[in-house]
Amino acid sequence: MKLALKSALKLSLLATLVASSVASAYAADAKNVIFFLGDGMGPSVVTTARIYKYGEDGSLNMDKLERTARIKTFSNDAQTTDSAPSMAAYMTGVKMNNEVISMSQDTIAKEPSRDVNGNLGVDNCPASGNGKSVPTILELAKAKGKAVGAITTTELTHATPATTFSHICNRNAQYAIAAQSVPGGAGYNTALLDGVDVLMGGGRNHYTPWSATNKYGRADGRNLLTEFAAKGYTVAATKADMQAAPNNKKFIGLYSTRSHLEYELDRTATPPLGEGATQPSLSEMTVKAIDLLSQNSNGYFLMVEGGRIDHALHGINAKRALSDTIAFDDAIKAAIDKIKLTDPTLSNTLIIVTADHDHTLAFNGYGKRGNPILDINRDYKSGQPSKDADGNTYTTLVFGNGPNRPNLRTNVDSATALADNYLQETGVRLASETHGGGDVKLLATGAGAKTFKGTLDNTKVFDLLKAAFGF
Ligand SMILES: [Zn+2]
Image 1 (spheres, protein in one colour):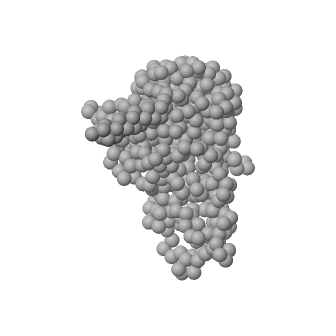
Image 2 (image 1 turned 45 degrees about the vertical axis):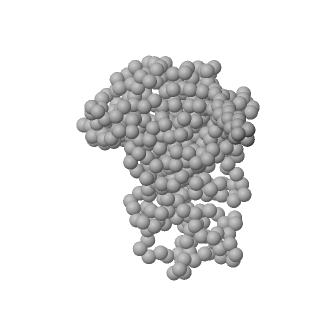
Image 3 (image 1 turned 90 degrees about the horizontal axis):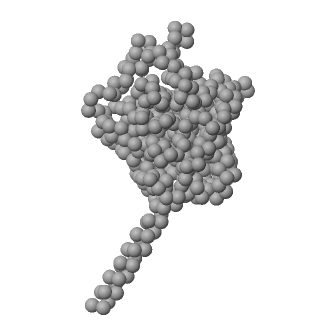
Protein backbone atom coordinates (compact mmCIF):
# COMPACT_ATOMS: atom_id res chain seq x y z
CA MET A 1 0.00 0.00 0.00
CA LYS A 2 2.72 2.43 1.07
CA LEU A 3 4.79 1.44 -1.94
CA ALA A 4 1.85 2.00 -4.28
CA LEU A 5 1.26 5.43 -2.75
CA LYS A 6 4.94 6.25 -3.15
CA SER A 7 4.94 5.33 -6.82
CA ALA A 8 1.71 7.26 -7.37
CA LEU A 9 3.37 10.33 -5.86
CA LYS A 10 6.44 9.76 -8.02
CA LEU A 11 4.24 9.47 -11.08
CA SER A 12 2.37 12.66 -10.30
CA LEU A 13 5.68 14.47 -9.68
CA LEU A 14 6.89 13.17 -13.02
CA ALA A 15 3.70 14.35 -14.70
CA THR A 16 4.19 17.83 -13.21
CA LEU A 17 7.77 17.92 -14.43
CA VAL A 18 6.72 16.84 -17.92
CA ALA A 19 3.92 19.42 -17.97
CA SER A 20 6.23 22.23 -16.89
CA SER A 21 8.87 21.30 -19.45
CA VAL A 22 6.18 21.29 -22.17
CA ALA A 23 4.99 24.69 -20.95
CA SER A 24 8.50 26.14 -21.02
CA ALA A 25 9.14 24.65 -24.45
CA TYR A 26 6.17 26.66 -25.67
CA ALA A 27 7.20 29.88 -23.93
CA ALA A 28 6.32 32.96 -25.94
CA ASP A 29 9.74 34.30 -26.65
CA ALA A 30 10.12 35.20 -30.33
CA LYS A 31 9.42 38.83 -31.14
CA ASN A 32 10.49 38.28 -34.75
CA VAL A 33 10.27 35.23 -37.00
CA ILE A 34 12.00 34.79 -40.34
CA PHE A 35 10.78 31.75 -42.29
CA PHE A 36 13.15 30.72 -45.09
CA LEU A 37 11.68 28.39 -47.68
CA GLY A 38 13.82 26.71 -50.31
CA ASP A 39 11.30 25.63 -52.92
CA GLY A 40 11.94 21.98 -53.82
CA MET A 41 15.08 21.93 -51.66
CA GLY A 42 14.97 18.26 -50.70
CA PRO A 43 17.73 16.50 -48.73
CA SER A 44 19.79 15.52 -51.80
CA VAL A 45 19.66 19.14 -53.04
CA VAL A 46 21.03 20.36 -49.70
CA THR A 47 23.83 17.76 -49.67
CA THR A 48 24.89 18.32 -53.27
CA ALA A 49 24.76 22.13 -52.92
CA ARG A 50 27.07 21.79 -49.90
CA ILE A 51 29.56 19.71 -51.90
CA TYR A 52 29.23 22.03 -54.92
CA LYS A 53 30.29 25.07 -52.90
CA TYR A 54 32.12 23.87 -49.78
CA GLY A 55 33.14 20.25 -50.37
CA GLU A 56 32.06 17.11 -48.52
CA ASP A 57 33.40 18.26 -45.14
CA GLY A 58 32.36 21.90 -45.50
CA SER A 59 29.18 23.49 -44.19
CA LEU A 60 26.38 25.47 -45.69
CA ASN A 61 25.21 28.38 -43.54
CA MET A 62 22.00 26.45 -42.91
CA ASP A 63 24.07 23.47 -41.66
CA LYS A 64 25.20 25.65 -38.74
CA LEU A 65 21.67 26.02 -37.34
CA GLU A 66 21.59 23.88 -34.23
CA ARG A 67 17.98 22.60 -34.20
CA THR A 68 16.71 20.14 -36.80
CA ALA A 69 13.52 18.29 -37.63
CA ARG A 70 12.24 16.09 -40.41
CA ILE A 71 9.00 17.11 -42.12
CA LYS A 72 6.27 15.00 -43.77
CA THR A 73 4.96 16.88 -46.79
CA PHE A 74 2.00 14.93 -48.25
CA SER A 75 -1.09 17.02 -49.10
CA ASN A 76 -4.77 16.31 -48.45
CA ASP A 77 -5.29 14.57 -51.78
CA ALA A 78 -1.79 13.60 -52.96
CA GLN A 79 1.21 11.58 -51.78
CA THR A 80 3.36 14.16 -53.52
CA THR A 81 2.44 17.75 -52.87
CA ASP A 82 2.80 20.87 -54.97
CA SER A 83 4.05 24.09 -53.41
CA ALA A 84 0.59 25.50 -52.68
CA PRO A 85 -0.68 23.11 -49.98
CA SER A 86 2.77 22.35 -48.54
CA MET A 87 3.64 25.98 -47.91
CA ALA A 88 0.04 26.66 -46.88
CA ALA A 89 0.36 23.86 -44.30
CA TYR A 90 3.29 25.72 -42.73
CA MET A 91 1.47 29.04 -42.92
CA THR A 92 -2.00 27.91 -41.74
CA GLY A 93 -1.77 24.50 -40.04
CA VAL A 94 -4.40 23.10 -42.42
CA LYS A 95 -3.72 20.18 -44.77
CA MET A 96 -5.37 21.15 -48.05
CA ASN A 97 -5.65 19.83 -51.59
CA ASN A 98 -2.98 20.27 -54.24
CA GLU A 99 -3.05 23.73 -55.90
CA VAL A 100 -5.15 25.30 -53.11
CA ILE A 101 -3.82 28.47 -51.43
CA SER A 102 -4.62 28.89 -47.69
CA MET A 103 -8.20 27.60 -47.76
CA SER A 104 -10.08 24.97 -45.74
CA GLN A 105 -9.56 21.25 -46.38
CA ASP A 106 -12.82 20.87 -48.36
CA THR A 107 -11.75 23.42 -50.98
CA ILE A 108 -11.61 22.02 -54.51
CA ALA A 109 -9.01 23.48 -56.85
CA LYS A 110 -10.72 25.05 -59.89
CA GLU A 111 -8.52 26.34 -62.70
CA PRO A 112 -8.97 29.98 -63.70
CA SER A 113 -10.23 30.64 -67.25
CA ARG A 114 -8.72 32.74 -70.02
CA ASP A 115 -9.64 36.42 -70.21
CA VAL A 116 -10.20 38.34 -73.47
CA ASN A 117 -6.44 38.61 -73.94
CA GLY A 118 -5.81 34.90 -73.41
CA ASN A 119 -4.35 35.23 -69.90
CA LEU A 120 -5.61 33.28 -66.86
CA GLY A 121 -7.42 36.37 -65.62
CA VAL A 122 -10.81 34.83 -64.79
CA ASP A 123 -10.92 33.48 -61.24
CA ASN A 124 -13.37 30.57 -60.94
CA CYS A 125 -12.99 30.18 -57.18
CA PRO A 126 -15.77 32.39 -55.83
CA ALA A 127 -18.34 29.75 -56.83
CA SER A 128 -20.54 29.21 -53.78
CA GLY A 129 -19.72 26.53 -51.25
CA ASN A 130 -16.13 26.04 -52.28
CA GLY A 131 -14.25 26.26 -49.02
CA LYS A 132 -13.33 29.06 -46.64
CA SER A 133 -10.23 31.13 -45.97
CA VAL A 134 -8.05 29.98 -43.09
CA PRO A 135 -5.82 32.47 -41.22
CA THR A 136 -2.12 32.58 -42.05
CA ILE A 137 0.73 33.18 -39.62
CA LEU A 138 1.42 36.42 -41.51
CA GLU A 139 -2.15 37.60 -40.88
CA LEU A 140 -1.96 36.58 -37.21
CA ALA A 141 1.30 38.52 -36.83
CA LYS A 142 -0.27 41.56 -38.51
CA ALA A 143 -3.26 41.37 -36.16
CA LYS A 144 -0.85 41.48 -33.21
CA GLY A 145 0.62 44.74 -34.48
CA LYS A 146 3.74 43.27 -36.03
CA ALA A 147 5.19 44.29 -39.40
CA VAL A 148 4.94 41.54 -42.03
CA GLY A 149 6.65 40.75 -45.29
CA ALA A 150 6.96 38.17 -48.05
CA ILE A 151 9.86 38.16 -50.51
CA THR A 152 10.76 35.71 -53.26
CA THR A 153 12.79 35.15 -56.42
CA THR A 154 9.66 33.95 -58.26
CA GLU A 155 6.68 35.99 -59.36
CA LEU A 156 5.23 37.56 -56.21
CA THR A 157 1.90 35.90 -57.01
CA HIS A 158 3.48 32.42 -57.26
CA ALA A 159 2.22 29.69 -54.93
CA THR A 160 4.70 29.99 -52.05
CA PRO A 161 4.45 33.75 -51.37
CA ALA A 162 0.72 33.67 -52.20
CA THR A 163 0.02 31.32 -49.27
CA THR A 164 1.21 33.99 -46.84
CA PHE A 165 -1.10 36.83 -47.97
CA SER A 166 -3.94 35.40 -50.07
CA HIS A 167 -6.70 32.78 -50.09
CA ILE A 168 -7.82 31.19 -53.33
CA CYS A 169 -8.86 27.79 -54.59
CA ASN A 170 -6.25 27.64 -57.37
CA ARG A 171 -2.65 28.87 -57.44
CA ASN A 172 -2.87 29.74 -61.13
CA ALA A 173 -5.36 32.57 -60.52
CA GLN A 174 -2.41 34.95 -60.18
CA TYR A 175 -4.23 38.13 -61.26
CA ALA A 176 -6.76 37.60 -58.46
CA ILE A 177 -3.94 36.83 -56.00
CA ALA A 178 -2.32 40.16 -56.91
CA ALA A 179 -5.64 42.00 -56.30
CA GLN A 180 -5.89 40.42 -52.84
CA SER A 181 -2.71 42.24 -51.79
CA VAL A 182 -3.74 45.85 -52.60
CA PRO A 183 -5.10 47.60 -49.49
CA GLY A 184 -8.67 48.77 -50.00
CA GLY A 185 -8.88 47.69 -53.64
CA ALA A 186 -11.52 45.41 -55.18
CA GLY A 187 -10.86 41.83 -54.07
CA TYR A 188 -8.62 42.89 -51.16
CA ASN A 189 -7.89 40.35 -48.43
CA THR A 190 -9.08 42.43 -45.45
CA ALA A 191 -7.30 40.11 -43.00
CA LEU A 192 -4.15 41.99 -44.06
CA LEU A 193 -5.58 45.10 -42.30
CA ASP A 194 -3.56 48.09 -43.59
CA GLY A 195 -1.52 45.85 -45.91
CA VAL A 196 1.58 43.67 -46.07
CA ASP A 197 4.47 45.96 -45.12
CA VAL A 198 7.08 44.48 -47.48
CA LEU A 199 6.48 42.61 -50.73
CA MET A 200 9.19 41.67 -53.24
CA GLY A 201 9.45 39.35 -56.21
CA GLY A 202 8.88 39.30 -59.96
CA GLY A 203 5.88 39.27 -62.28
CA ARG A 204 4.92 42.93 -62.71
CA ASN A 205 2.49 41.82 -65.44
CA HIS A 206 0.00 40.67 -62.80
CA TYR A 207 -0.10 44.19 -61.33
CA THR A 208 -0.21 46.38 -64.45
CA PRO A 209 -2.92 46.80 -67.10
CA TRP A 210 -2.88 44.95 -70.41
CA SER A 211 -1.98 47.10 -73.35
CA ALA A 212 -1.81 46.46 -77.07
CA THR A 213 1.82 47.58 -77.03
CA ASN A 214 3.22 45.29 -74.38
CA LYS A 215 0.73 42.41 -74.86
CA TYR A 216 0.72 41.46 -71.19
CA GLY A 217 -1.08 42.54 -68.07
CA ARG A 218 -4.44 42.70 -66.37
CA ALA A 219 -7.62 42.53 -68.43
CA ASP A 220 -9.49 44.61 -65.80
CA GLY A 221 -7.36 47.64 -66.69
CA ARG A 222 -6.24 48.26 -63.10
CA ASN A 223 -2.74 49.41 -62.28
CA LEU A 224 -2.22 47.89 -58.88
CA LEU A 225 1.16 49.57 -58.49
CA THR A 226 -0.49 53.00 -58.79
CA GLU A 227 -3.00 51.83 -56.18
CA PHE A 228 -0.18 50.69 -53.88
CA ALA A 229 1.54 54.08 -54.27
CA ALA A 230 -1.73 55.84 -53.39
CA LYS A 231 -1.76 53.82 -50.15
CA GLY A 232 1.67 55.10 -49.22
CA TYR A 233 3.87 52.32 -50.56
CA THR A 234 7.24 52.91 -52.19
CA VAL A 235 7.05 51.07 -55.53
CA ALA A 236 10.37 49.72 -56.85
CA ALA A 237 11.31 48.05 -60.12
CA THR A 238 15.08 47.68 -59.72
CA LYS A 239 17.78 47.04 -57.16
CA ALA A 240 18.68 50.77 -57.28
CA ASP A 241 15.05 51.71 -56.51
CA MET A 242 15.07 49.23 -53.63
CA GLN A 243 18.26 50.56 -52.09
CA ALA A 244 17.05 54.17 -52.36
CA ALA A 245 13.70 53.41 -50.69
CA PRO A 246 13.10 54.98 -47.26
CA ASN A 247 12.77 52.43 -44.44
CA ASN A 248 9.78 54.12 -42.81
CA LYS A 249 7.25 53.44 -45.60
CA LYS A 250 5.57 50.27 -46.82
CA PHE A 251 7.34 48.76 -49.81
CA ILE A 252 6.60 46.72 -52.92
CA GLY A 253 9.44 45.79 -55.28
CA LEU A 254 8.72 43.87 -58.49
CA TYR A 255 12.01 43.30 -60.27
CA SER A 256 10.86 41.46 -63.38
CA THR A 257 8.53 42.63 -66.12
CA ARG A 258 6.57 39.49 -66.74
CA SER A 259 8.13 36.49 -65.04
CA HIS A 260 10.40 35.33 -62.23
CA LEU A 261 13.72 36.88 -61.29
CA GLU A 262 16.67 35.45 -63.21
CA TYR A 263 18.47 32.37 -61.94
CA GLU A 264 21.48 33.35 -59.82
CA LEU A 265 23.85 31.85 -62.44
CA ASP A 266 22.35 34.17 -65.08
CA ARG A 267 22.00 37.22 -62.83
CA THR A 268 25.72 37.00 -62.03
CA ALA A 269 26.85 36.07 -65.57
CA THR A 270 29.03 38.57 -67.48
CA PRO A 271 27.04 40.29 -68.82
CA PRO A 272 23.95 39.30 -66.82
CA LEU A 273 21.23 37.58 -68.80
CA GLY A 274 17.68 38.89 -69.17
CA GLU A 275 16.75 41.52 -66.59
CA GLY A 276 19.46 40.23 -64.24
CA ALA A 277 21.54 43.42 -64.46
CA THR A 278 18.91 45.43 -62.56
CA GLN A 279 17.80 42.75 -60.11
CA PRO A 280 18.92 42.48 -56.46
CA SER A 281 20.22 39.20 -55.04
CA LEU A 282 18.04 37.36 -52.53
CA SER A 283 20.55 38.38 -49.82
CA GLU A 284 20.15 42.06 -50.74
CA MET A 285 16.37 41.73 -50.73
CA THR A 286 16.48 40.01 -47.33
CA VAL A 287 18.67 42.67 -45.71
CA LYS A 288 16.46 45.46 -47.07
CA ALA A 289 13.32 43.67 -45.87
CA ILE A 290 14.80 43.46 -42.35
CA ASP A 291 15.68 47.20 -42.48
CA LEU A 292 12.09 47.99 -43.41
CA LEU A 293 10.33 45.60 -41.02
CA SER A 294 12.52 46.28 -37.99
CA GLN A 295 11.16 49.84 -37.83
CA ASN A 296 8.15 48.33 -36.04
CA SER A 297 8.88 48.07 -32.31
CA ASN A 298 6.39 45.18 -31.95
CA GLY A 299 8.53 42.91 -34.11
CA TYR A 300 7.92 41.26 -37.45
CA PHE A 301 7.23 38.15 -39.53
CA LEU A 302 9.15 37.73 -42.77
CA MET A 303 8.93 34.92 -45.32
CA VAL A 304 11.93 34.57 -47.65
CA GLU A 305 11.68 32.17 -50.57
CA GLY A 306 14.46 30.81 -52.75
CA GLY A 307 11.85 29.95 -55.33
CA ARG A 308 13.80 29.06 -58.42
CA ILE A 309 15.63 26.04 -56.98
CA ASP A 310 12.41 24.23 -57.86
CA HIS A 311 12.28 25.59 -61.42
CA ALA A 312 15.81 24.47 -62.26
CA LEU A 313 15.02 21.01 -60.85
CA HIS A 314 11.86 20.73 -62.97
CA GLY A 315 14.13 21.63 -65.89
CA ILE A 316 16.66 18.88 -64.84
CA ASN A 317 19.43 21.51 -64.79
CA ALA A 318 21.27 20.71 -61.56
CA LYS A 319 23.82 23.52 -61.95
CA ARG A 320 21.21 26.27 -61.75
CA ALA A 321 19.41 24.45 -58.92
CA LEU A 322 22.60 24.23 -56.86
CA SER A 323 23.69 27.82 -57.54
CA ASP A 324 20.23 29.07 -56.55
CA THR A 325 20.45 26.93 -53.40
CA ILE A 326 23.75 28.65 -52.56
CA ALA A 327 22.18 32.09 -53.15
CA PHE A 328 19.35 31.06 -50.80
CA ASP A 329 21.86 29.83 -48.22
CA ASP A 330 23.79 33.11 -48.52
CA ALA A 331 20.57 35.00 -47.73
CA ILE A 332 20.29 33.03 -44.47
CA LYS A 333 23.77 34.19 -43.47
CA ALA A 334 23.02 37.77 -44.53
CA ALA A 335 19.90 37.77 -42.32
CA ILE A 336 21.63 36.26 -39.29
CA ASP A 337 24.61 38.64 -39.57
CA LYS A 338 22.24 41.59 -39.87
CA ILE A 339 20.07 40.57 -36.90
CA LYS A 340 23.06 39.85 -34.68
CA LEU A 341 24.05 43.52 -34.91
CA THR A 342 21.07 44.34 -32.66
CA ASP A 343 20.20 40.92 -31.20
CA PRO A 344 23.59 39.20 -30.72
CA THR A 345 22.25 35.92 -29.30
CA LEU A 346 19.03 35.85 -31.38
CA SER A 347 17.12 36.00 -28.10
CA ASN A 348 14.27 37.85 -29.84
CA THR A 349 14.37 36.26 -33.26
CA LEU A 350 13.47 32.79 -34.51
CA ILE A 351 15.00 31.68 -37.80
CA ILE A 352 13.46 28.70 -39.59
CA VAL A 353 14.84 27.15 -42.78
CA THR A 354 12.97 24.42 -44.59
CA ALA A 355 11.63 23.21 -47.94
CA ASP A 356 8.11 22.58 -49.14
CA HIS A 357 8.83 19.26 -50.87
CA ASP A 358 11.51 17.09 -52.39
CA HIS A 359 12.40 16.46 -56.06
CA THR A 360 13.69 13.39 -57.88
CA LEU A 361 17.37 14.41 -57.88
CA ALA A 362 19.51 11.37 -57.09
CA PHE A 363 23.13 11.42 -55.88
CA ASN A 364 24.48 8.11 -57.22
CA GLY A 365 27.58 6.00 -57.79
CA TYR A 366 30.65 5.56 -55.56
CA GLY A 367 32.39 8.79 -56.46
CA LYS A 368 35.84 9.73 -55.19
CA ARG A 369 36.12 12.42 -52.50
CA GLY A 370 36.66 15.80 -54.11
CA ASN A 371 35.24 14.82 -57.51
CA PRO A 372 33.12 17.81 -58.64
CA ILE A 373 29.52 16.97 -57.83
CA LEU A 374 28.23 18.02 -61.28
CA ASP A 375 30.91 16.02 -63.10
CA ILE A 376 30.93 12.46 -64.39
CA ASN A 377 31.35 9.97 -61.58
CA ARG A 378 34.94 8.92 -60.82
CA ASP A 379 35.56 5.77 -58.83
CA TYR A 380 36.74 6.30 -55.26
CA LYS A 381 39.45 3.65 -55.53
CA SER A 382 40.92 4.19 -58.97
CA GLY A 383 39.94 7.83 -59.57
CA GLN A 384 39.04 6.73 -63.09
CA PRO A 385 35.62 7.41 -64.69
CA SER A 386 33.00 4.97 -63.39
CA LYS A 387 31.21 2.96 -66.09
CA ASP A 388 27.67 1.68 -66.41
CA ALA A 389 26.98 -1.98 -67.30
CA ASP A 390 27.46 -1.14 -70.99
CA GLY A 391 30.83 0.53 -70.45
CA ASN A 392 29.69 4.17 -70.63
CA THR A 393 30.54 6.99 -68.24
CA TYR A 394 27.74 8.62 -66.25
CA THR A 395 27.20 11.66 -64.04
CA THR A 396 26.94 11.54 -60.25
CA LEU A 397 23.67 13.48 -60.42
CA VAL A 398 20.68 12.12 -62.32
CA PHE A 399 16.93 12.53 -61.97
CA GLY A 400 14.25 9.90 -61.39
CA ASN A 401 12.15 11.41 -64.16
CA GLY A 402 12.21 14.20 -66.72
CA PRO A 403 12.76 14.85 -70.41
CA ASN A 404 16.33 13.59 -70.92
CA ARG A 405 16.11 9.80 -71.11
CA PRO A 406 18.36 8.55 -73.90
CA ASN A 407 17.04 5.48 -75.71
CA LEU A 408 20.59 4.21 -75.67
CA ARG A 409 23.07 5.61 -73.18
CA THR A 410 26.43 6.81 -74.48
CA ASN A 411 29.52 8.27 -72.84
CA VAL A 412 29.17 11.64 -71.10
CA ASP A 413 32.39 13.66 -70.91
CA SER A 414 33.41 16.17 -68.22
CA ALA A 415 33.11 19.28 -70.37
CA THR A 416 29.55 18.36 -71.30
CA ALA A 417 28.54 17.46 -67.74
CA LEU A 418 29.98 20.66 -66.25
CA ALA A 419 28.44 23.05 -68.80
CA ASP A 420 25.90 25.58 -67.45
CA ASN A 421 23.13 24.23 -69.65
CA TYR A 422 23.75 20.50 -69.20
CA LEU A 423 20.55 18.59 -68.48
CA GLN A 424 21.04 15.50 -66.33
CA GLU A 425 19.78 12.13 -67.57
CA THR A 426 16.49 10.83 -66.23
CA GLY A 427 14.83 7.48 -65.51
CA VAL A 428 11.20 7.79 -66.59
CA ARG A 429 10.67 10.06 -69.60
CA LEU A 430 8.38 12.95 -68.64
CA ALA A 431 8.09 16.38 -70.26
CA SER A 432 8.88 18.05 -66.94
CA GLU A 433 10.50 16.53 -63.87
CA THR A 434 8.12 16.06 -60.92
CA HIS A 435 8.39 16.75 -57.22
CA GLY A 436 9.37 13.91 -54.90
CA GLY A 437 7.24 12.72 -52.00
CA GLY A 438 10.04 12.20 -49.48
CA ASP A 439 10.47 14.04 -46.19
CA VAL A 440 12.39 17.31 -46.09
CA LYS A 441 14.64 18.87 -43.44
CA LEU A 442 13.82 21.78 -41.19
CA LEU A 443 16.56 23.74 -39.43
CA ALA A 444 16.07 26.36 -36.74
CA THR A 445 17.95 28.71 -34.49
CA GLY A 446 17.16 31.55 -32.10
CA ALA A 447 14.19 32.28 -29.87
CA GLY A 448 11.86 29.28 -29.56
CA ALA A 449 13.96 27.10 -31.87
CA LYS A 450 14.22 24.20 -29.45
CA THR A 451 10.65 23.04 -30.06
CA PHE A 452 11.46 22.13 -33.67
CA LYS A 453 12.61 18.51 -33.40
CA GLY A 454 11.74 14.95 -34.35
CA THR A 455 9.54 13.98 -37.28
CA LEU A 456 6.71 16.49 -37.74
CA ASP A 457 3.78 16.77 -40.05
CA ASN A 458 4.05 20.01 -42.05
CA THR A 459 0.86 21.32 -40.39
CA LYS A 460 2.51 21.00 -36.96
CA VAL A 461 5.10 23.59 -37.96
CA PHE A 462 2.34 26.22 -37.94
CA ASP A 463 1.47 25.34 -34.32
CA LEU A 464 5.11 25.67 -33.32
CA LEU A 465 5.45 29.03 -35.11
CA LYS A 466 2.34 30.31 -33.34
CA ALA A 467 3.62 29.04 -30.00
CA ALA A 468 7.04 30.61 -30.60
CA PHE A 469 5.32 33.95 -31.21
CA GLY A 470 3.09 33.35 -28.18
CA PHE A 471 -0.13 33.57 -30.18
ZN1 LIG B 1 7.66 22.71 -58.38
